[in-house]
Amino acid sequence: MKLIGVISDTHIHGGSTRALPEQVYAAFENVEMILHGGDLTAPSVLDALNLLAPTIAVRGNNDYGALANLPISRRVEIEDVVIGITHGDKPANNLRVPKLTDAPGNSQAAADAISHFEFDGDVNCIIFGHSHRALLQNREINGRGVLLLNPGSPTDRRWSPHFGCALLKIDGDKIEPQLITW
Image (cartoon, rainbow, N blue to C red; front, side, top):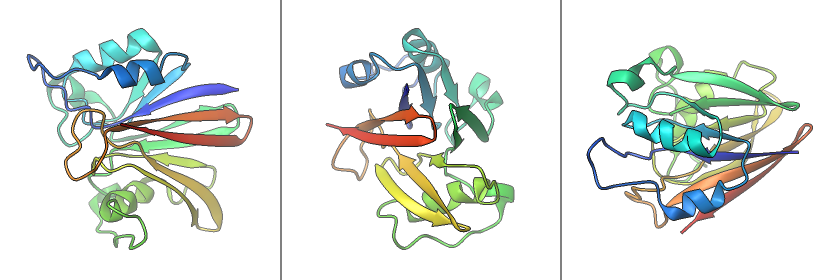
C-alpha cells in the first residue's frame, strides 16, 4: 500500500508572503510521493514539497522560468495503477474539446485533462487542477472506469468555498481517494 499526496494550484510566487499551509504539511506527513497538478509558480514550492516526499509535477499556465521545463502532461505508475497528470488549462494538441456538463466547477478543465489520456487504455486516474475547485468523480471513458481528481487549491480558493489537497491510498490496482478541505 502506498500513500500519495495530491496538490495543485499552489500559486506561491517568489518573494511572496504566501506559503504552503500547515494543513498541507499535516495531510502529507506520511506520504511516499507527492503529485502536483501545476501552477506552482515558484521553484521553491518543489523544494518545499520534496522535503516531505519525492514530488512529480506538471507545468501549469502560470509556470514560467525554470518551471517552464516541466512537462504539460505525464504518466506515473504506482503499484498496478497508472495515473495521468496535467494541469487542465488546455486540451491535448490544442484541439477544442466539448465541456463536461456533469463535472461541477470543472466542466472545461476536466474535459481538457481527459483529452490528454482518453486513448491511453491503461490510465486509472487523471489528476488535474486549473479551476481551483475540488472534484472527485468516477467516470467511464471509452468503456473503462477512470477516477477524475482535482484537489482544489491550498492557497487560493477563487470561486471555491474551501481550500484543498488530496490523498490517494493505492493498494495493488485499487485506489482510495480522499479530498481534504478546510
